[in-house]
Length: 80
Image (cartoon, rainbow, N blue to C red; front, side, top):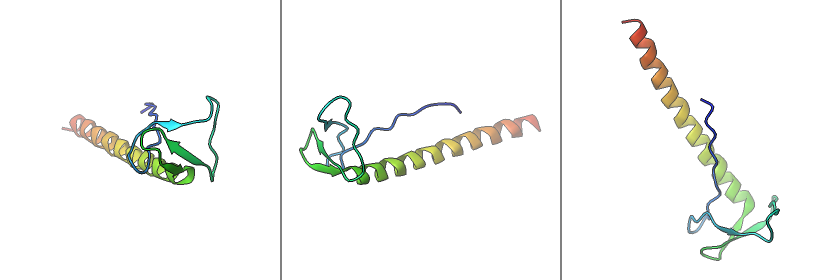
């Protein structure tokens, strides 16, 4: 289970993944506002991160469940 998944931040209003960043090396910090390139609304970085972490946790739990189900099936085949 060594798959890497890249989760992108989504605008809290229109769910776009495109944001206006001042330059290529910009790294937003806690308290910063990030402008959505699609709808033009300002997103709070901390809120974006909370949603991204929640989504990442849900995805990880789904993957664990899938792996456990696969493992259980394989194990049951061995002892038939």
